[in-house]
Image (tube, rainbow, N blue to C red):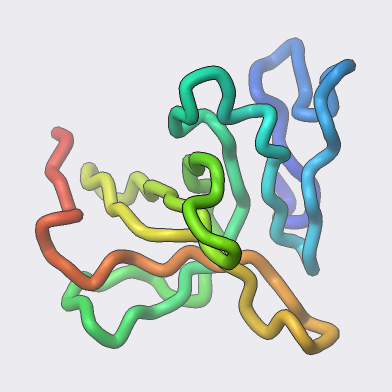
Amino acid sequence: MNGTTPIGRTSHMSIYSPGKERPSVLHGTWLEAECFAYPGDSFTRRAYVELHANPHNAIELPYGRRYVVACKCPDTFFSIPARLRFRGRTIAGFVSIADADSDVARFTFTPEADAKFYTRTD
């Protein structure tokens, strides 16, 4: 993955499958359409996002780098629940748009502030 184009869902099907909407793209980051989260509103929708620091959490992440996260449907007008797998942990957070009013708008992932949202999955 070169950081600017969405990767395929499997080796034989890209995210541009017939009958599916194209992802939203903002300056090299992207978010799949809501139809990927149905049925059941599960964490099956993907987004390629930049990690954004939350000043209220203590977890060390490579902020500023980009990763693929699993998303659900939006729970508010401006954020989407998401999960990041990083070094054997699943980190809960949300996807939103940073610098929405500028020419460098991008999708970002911000981890939750509460440590109970970090789970070990080894």
